Amino acid sequence: MTKRSSPLPPGWVSARLYHLLAPLVALVVVALFEQTWLGELLEDQTVNLRFRARASFDPPADPRLVFVGIDQQSLDKFGRYPWPRPVIAHFLTAIAQANANPHTVAFDILFTEKSSNPADDVALGDAAALLPNVITAALSVKPSGVSKKDADVIKAAEERTKADLQDPGPTMPFTQIHGDARKIRGSNIATLPVKPVREQSLFGFANDEPSPVDYIRHNIPLLIRVRDQVYPSLALQTLCQMLNVDPDKVEVNVGENVILKNTSGKSWTIPVDEQGEYVINYRRNSSFRSLSFGLLSRFLDEYLQKGAPLPPECNIEKKTLLIGEAATGLTDLGPTPLQAESPLVYTHLNVVNNVLQNDYLGFVPWSWVVIGWSLVAWPTLLRLKEAPLVEAVSTPI
Figure (tube, rainbow, N blue to C red):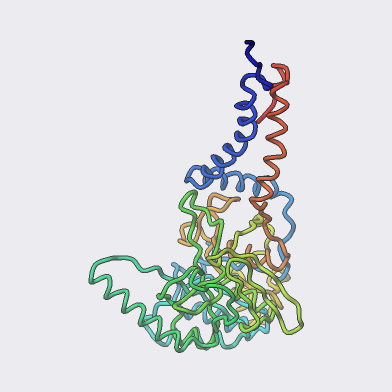
């Protein structure tokens, strides 16, 4: 009796299973690696390299944006920082008296602690009331600690926040929330501008913690939840004023986008994740027009005292000023994809500019990655099975 030969050559099944499963296994391994600290670091570094590679081709920022930096020249004029609040009050008053007419003035500066002299806080609030759109910074605070003493401190902070939000001034929370607002980043504790300031100005949250992987701020909260209400970041509040968008015309789709609509019917759609965070599309700092706080203050004073006209570089009419620290040695500096040390107000500037210019980062959906990988990997493996040795060795997989 003769033995019947198999219709399939030896190893055919295992070879076909290898060709079928190997790309899928490799894809799963890559996906799992991407979730690790090292995988996230490598991905962030490749993104940073791409930012740097294109930096020389970055277009100019929106001409309405002006960074007013508290630089060394400003410190030489006004002394050690932080300054007493009458310094800021005088700056705002000089802008108003000189009819410099900026559209919006936003401070990436916290005025959340009471001054030793209460009159200083009142002076700053009164000065803010002289201009149409002044925004100051607030901060969302994540409670920490497990002892009874910590619990008492947390409870007291929560009560202060609750009381402050009962008198928030003109700043209003967003009401059009679609989805689970509890997923939006925030807590029950926030430090708001002192009462005389927040009664006469708007506030936005300036939270911008760095990535724990490379200490760069890749994402920034566009929305902040305080208790059960959702408020704008400093950048989003600035955008709302620039674009004349009322709080009740802001639509939040949790995990998808934030839609701004103004009275003219125009709208802007900003992508966000489930926590309300936005991925910053960094452009080089030199793309933005910048001014020295001290220099602008000096020319405003000379105009008021001597009638000396403001030089063209100090023309801020209808501009949006974002004011923040810039001098070496001050605290609000840190790394970005483009610089080892940069004024961190540029994170907010970039967010505002991204929206104004519809300049968002694009992300390839995972479904496309799977399809693209499969279309490349499977035919490549099938070809390698029959390819000559030289071709097999030289073909990237």
